[in-house]
Amino acid sequence: MSRPAHLLTPASSAWPADVDPQRLHDLVAQVLERARAAGADAAEAGLTADSGLSVNVRLGEVDTLEYHRDKGLGVTLYFGRRKGSASTTDFSPRAIAETVAAAADIARYTSEDPCAGLPDAADLAREIPDLDLYHAWDLDADAAIALARECEAAALGFDARITNSEGATLDTHGGYRVYGNTHGFLAGYASSRHSLSCTVIGEEDGAMQRDYWYTVARHPEDLEPAEAVGRHAARRTVRRLGARSMTTGRMPVLFAPEVARGLVGHFLRAINGHALYRKASFLLDHLGRPVFPDWLDMDERPHLPRALGSAPFDNEGVATRSRHLVEGGVLKGYVLDSYSARRLGLHTTGNAGGTHNVFVGDSGLDFDGLLEKMGDGLLVTELMGQGVNPVTGDYSRGAAGFRIENGAIAGPVHEITIAGNLRDMYRGIVATGTDYDRRGNVITGSILVGEMTVAGR
Image (cartoon, rainbow, N blue to C red):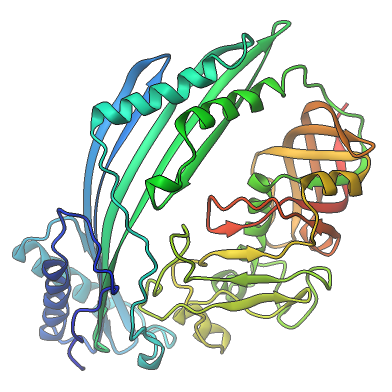
């Protein structure tokens, strides 16, 4: 087994002030040395060190204030094709030795698995691009509380029908991650995540509704202003007042960007290697076949600067790369780590731990254009329940949103269910919007599905 390479970090060398990257890299290297001493044929170890601040304010009063500092170390040893894993939050030499010994004991008594093992050395990242993922927020508790209060106050003062609040929450978080294995890979990078959210309750004619809004970013300067978040949460709540059900029928359904992300998420889970080799996916054996309309493209873009899903390498140290998942409606690639790839007779796609910035192409229409194209139908802004069968693709979920008549919003609706099959829904997508929501790992605009069953009164 080769020795770990020199310390690899992004060119910017930006990391939390209370983190010593060299010490963390050295700890992982020590774990790998202990794994060798224990007789392992191969080993890998991952370490994280995180810290942050979270504050929640409700009706102007501080509900919770938390400082948190977390760390963890996980190690996996391979004896031939036998695998054992163990973890610890104690970085003392004794605890590390016991963790490695525990992993070795497990590995010696597990069954052989011909697909177990490290990824191929040729697939590992050799350079760590600077993706601009870490930006500290110099924010103390008083300043965090003030921002949360400002956010909630803006919501409560927006309209007299806003009568209560579930609070405003501010989170700021930064951390450092290191991964190494006995192929000679040892690398790390820092990342940050900051967010502000608000949820309020409105009342009219004895009926109540609630809604929310949030902003999230790697850099605090990319967050929406606190007042804007609060006012948007209140605006969304007020527009839901007076909601009623709908008449059951078949109609077009427009998924707003914040819920369209979930629709794409079902697709990504269906093309995940672990679901595929277990034959637990409605898209089994669909590689190279049409899944979406012939105009739709979907890409993975792991190196977008400051994006929430960006990463220079996956959880196995495999280099991340931009690629087409869907091109011209045709499924071009699965989502694979090294294990699932071997089970399927394929090659890892650098997706141990998930996808990285899935970007759904638009059809050139903005939100108003999508409403006009739909004519009459349903705009979905909230989904409830877990009624999705990943094996058959059957889809049935509670929903709320707005009736659309003649291309315009006609009124709020709730207590309805939308249903279909994901195969038909994907093939039946009529248009995708330019109104992109970038607050997550899936970057998409609104998605218009040509026809679904809407069950109401």
